[in-house]
Image 1: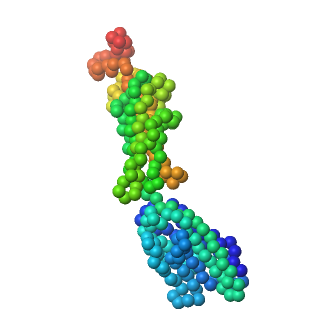
Image 2: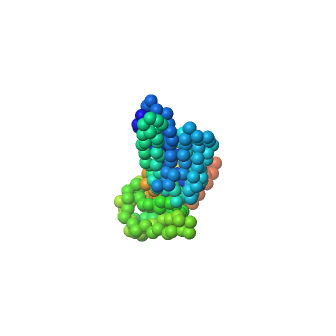
Image 3: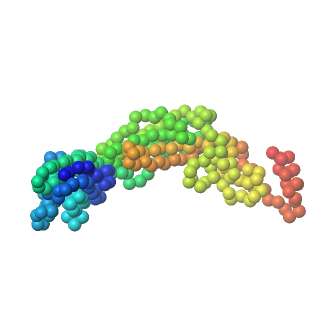
Length: 282
């Protein structure tokens, strides 16, 4: 008379203060529903009995706020969840006469809180060359569960110190990770630039403020990668398969050749004359 009982938590990981739905699916064969009961651990907090009026009944449970308007014969809606609700829930389905058969299904719910912003990433200097010592710190705002941090340079993992975890007064945990690394030439990759920086670092084309001739000759100011390669430091924060964010900084080598002073062409000076003058004085 009763089969295929299954309990679904939607979503299985719910943010603190949000709502969650517990849906108990079941199949009744040649028998009506007598009752469906929902439990947190061993304590019942919601019951639906179609033969009674009203059919729904809510039992007091610390931290559980049942939305009766959103609950029915298969689903119970809980609003404003707290961390204390993380754990095992179950639903018990009972078929009506003559068999009164009963089946129970179980599911886990996890209440989480993600960091409010992306990781914060700081370095001792803004530009580095091979042989320099790179010192960096990465941290996340508090979360629960705690966020794991990792550093990569040009998408290659680098060894670091142990992550530090700082517990806050509201049961959240902040994460912090430090990096100290002697940079080698192999850490720098030619032509590499960070995503979304928009400052032209590492491409050798200058900052785009010069004219076309200056850009063609690599005379524009800026051009972080003209003297070496790119180095992208990234810090990634991850909470299992629930959350992942990163922050990255481009730290490639600065231009080593001196930047020539601005050259002004008179109206009678042609391009050939300018090039001869430039290379003769270089």
